[in-house]
Amino acid sequence: MDFTEIGKAFLILFAVIDVIGGIPMILQVREKAGVIYPLRATLVSLGIMIVFLFLGEKILGLVGVDVNSFAVAGAFVLFFIALEMILGVKLFKEDHSAPGLPSSDPKVYSIVPLAFPVIAGAGTITTILSLRAEFQQVNIALAILLNMIPVLLVLFLTNRIERLLGRVGLIVLRKAFGIILLAISIKLFAGNITYLFPHTAQ
Image (tube, rainbow, N blue to C red; front, side):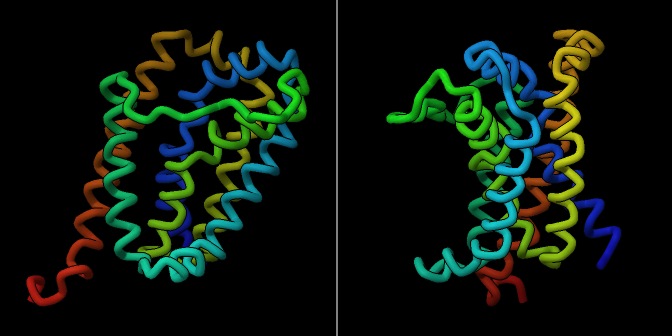
């Protein structure tokens, strides 16, 4: 257990999950569903992240991709997510619908789209797999668990946080985390690209 690694992984995941910046989406989901279940959404998100943390490398192995290659690909994903946060543009289009499921069921809305992809989305899963190239699994797992605390608190206190920060406050916070995420993506790319071209690194 390395507290430095846990702290770094926590901050990276906190920036990617961006639960504060996701408050407008959370409010939209609750408006459609009438009510959301914070604990259910948090536990499902946690389950998705832990599964990909411990089984993600095996899944990559089946398609012949190593962790360093995935980390470089993940760095590009994080780069574009950061651009979205900083510039206020939409580069990724996600389908938040769930065909065949009862759209009026609040329990369903707490899982799709709230748990996935709002909380444990493609960016979060990519980040978790990318972090395996730099940090120990146990430290990443603890960072994931710690991130569930602010996620749960925000889901319970969404209205209060929105009133406290205001629309401008949410925008400023989102852009600040976007800049941090941009720097992280560049560091992740630089730290793994040399493993793909070992001869040029000498």
